[in-house]
Length: 427
Ligand SMILES: [Mg+2]
Picture (cartoon, rainbow, N blue to C red):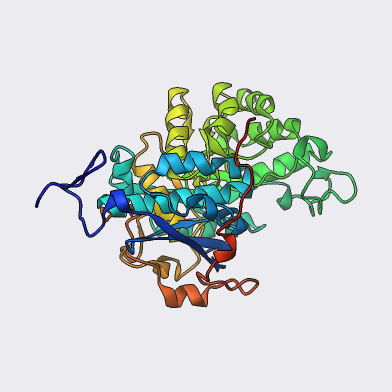
């Protein structure tokens, strides 16, 4: 093959059915799914060479967070992933608002990999592992024996790490377990330090009994994390954390809003259970306070909020220097899941990737060209195919899973082509 050099990129070894240097973005469209396991908008970025890239907006987030980026991407070369990421990252924020930038970054990385004929992990510097460990989130039930049985079923499927909910939702109906102002149970918007909710000694004992019973069913030969403690303040968190020490939990998650760095530090210093947060934080800059203060033991970015593939690797690397382990939060279709598989393969600091769809039987089939089942013995094999490594989306299944509230299937989006503002954060 003749060597073709365009600009500074040698294309001698590249499949020149794609010409990376001449690749341009021509369109950005979305398909709104539900039940995968939640509501997710899948992004498709089209190019002038027929290559398409897929990404996924964070679960429950608005597709408009991605669509507003379209005008900033049209005509650009998607192989310049970092350049485009820096161009668009001002349009993301914490929580679901990070979903557009993060999902677009996944789609750009998919395209860059396909254009150069390499898997996404190769663009990040190669891989540390051949399989990616998944942990299975498990919906909560009040009876700890039944909860244990649910977890045991996932363990029997090969998962080596599990997660359950342990918190005041188990206590509201227990007399004398919770002291709270009127309306506190229904209030989901008052942050923990200000909600005025206290767990009593009886409530703390009840939670410890619950976890003790679950552990007796599921055993101590599997990692088990706990989440959804409720909007309780630091002192109740410390008392619960101490009571759960005997059960060797992998981590206790999101007890305090991530914004309160010093309260996290106090909790981490007070309990001998790993503390964990991060699923709503956008960009490494957002993680720095917690990581610099050593305020948590496990950092838990959701790559569909934290900035996508490369930015989340940077978060993992930064945490590693500070002795803080990284696990990945996710509640997504196989599209964002595969983005996370490449990220996890390419990041040395990695514990496990959340799988939220263990009860969704068709989940796997939303994309083609991957092993079925995708998760075997609790792990996903890192694919070697270009980009995110799946063949295509399954159109029939996508159409079946369209969100009835807004059943868009990659409809044209030309009304977003000229969306504009004064795109500058300084003057
Ligand atoms: Mg959580």
